Each structure stands twice: as structure tokens, then as C-alpha cells.
Amino acid sequence: MANRLSIIGLIGLIIVLSVDARIDSRPFARRRTHYKLDYETILGAIGTPDCVKKCIDPFMKVISEVWDKSSVVDKAATLCKERAKALKCIKSQFMCDDKNGFATASKSLEMYCPKQKLFDALRPCLKANLSTVIDTCDDRCKIRYGVHKFTHYDDVKLVSRLGGNMLTVADHLGEICGFVTCGIKCIVEELESKCGGITGFVGMVEVLLAPIESIAQGVDEMQPGMKLLIAARLDKKCHFFMSPTEVEKVRNFDFSGFNYVFKL
Image 1 (cartoon, rainbow, N blue to C red):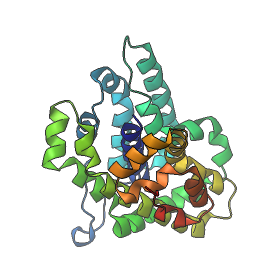
Image 2 (tube, helix red, strand yellow):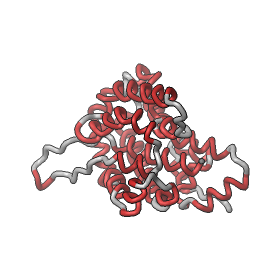
Image 3 (tube, rainbow, N blue to C red):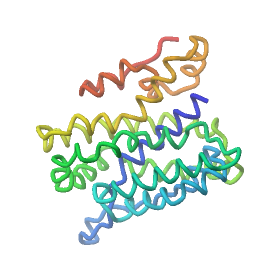
Image 4 (cartoon, one colour):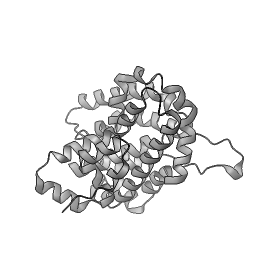
């Protein structure tokens, strides 16, 4: 279960990191390649039950809109509403249990939504700079390309059609962790240079790291033998989320936490 939640949480986080994509109106020679968000393949590959897909589809459509053409800052309130509806829908379905997968993947919104007003001072700076920051970090870390690449692996597409297979998805988890760590470091550093002195910035970093913190806490509470099994299976690029202490370092802008390797 922890391996499943780690994959769901990290895929959710990488989508959060890259949802400020928008239609590029620059001259053709300078345009960025646009990568469509194939969330159906992602949900299928991780074995999302049909009852959950039905509940979260409106939420994912808003994510796709943001990915395609809108600023995440403008759509934040809508995402909060759709997340609440999706969670309520999942809970109301008879024998529909996603093992808190959607709740974990969207953990950032769980932290942000009740405290939206606390970010009012930060919002103008984000609206002015976030798109440029995302473009800069996308060039550096290939975040959007990483999601696109993941959904186009032949084995991922196959298991997505066949009901999902976490072992197949786990084979590509190291790549995903690489995109996530590079993306978080870049976005936080770039935004800190532009918005770091504004009230709410530290809270925004906490929101960004919420899915990883949730996973790290869950893994930390497991029996030692189970943690050893998970660490042996995971790519070392992903070991950082097994330690709440290392995640705390990142929250305090010490990115050495991403280099943590679990001792087997």
C-alpha cells in the first residue's frame, strides 16, 4: 500500500508542479512544445477503480484546463470546490475504496483550500511571476515532458488498458522522483527570489510539499522490515520521501534532503 501511495502522491505532485502551462502565443520558432495531459492513462496505470474515476473526472478536467491554458492561481478556488465534491462522491459510493489515493495525491489542496485568504498577499506576485518561473524550471527539469513521457511508455499504456499494475509503474518511479526533486528545488528557489519576502511564501512551500510529507509520515510509522522492503524496491532518487526529517530539511530550503539514501 505504501508503494502505491508513494506513486500516486508523486504523480499528483508532479502534476501540481506543472499545471501552470498555458497556450504559447509566441512566434512559432520560439514556441514551446505543448504536451497534452493524458490523465486517463495515469489513472488507469495505477489501477484507479472505475467508481473513483467517475468521481474525480470533473476535478481532473479542471486540472487539464489549467494545464492547457489557464493560470493555476486563477483556478485555485475551482480546484478546491471540485476536490471537495470528488472526496464526497468517493465516500458515498458503495464499496468504493481507493486507499486514500486521491486524498494523498491532492494533499496540497487539502492544506491550501481552508487557508486561501492567508495567501492573498502572495497572489499578485504569483500571478505576475509563476508562469515565467514554470517555464524556466520546465526548461531546466523537463517537468511537463516527464509527465508526457511517462504516459507514452508502451508498458504503461498497456497496463493502463488492462486495469493497472503498480510494479510496471514503479519501474519508472525513479524518473518521476528525479523530475519532482528538480522541479521543487527550481520552483522554490526561483519564486523565493521574486516573492520570498511576502507573507504566505513559506506557507506555499509547505503546501507544495504536503503530499510528500504525508507519505513520509506513513512510511516512517511502518515496521522496520516493511521499510527495508520498500527501500530495496524503490529507486534511490525516491528515498527522500521515506524520511520526515529529510522532508523537513527541504521545507526549510535545505535541498540536501533530496540526496537522502535509506540504509539497507
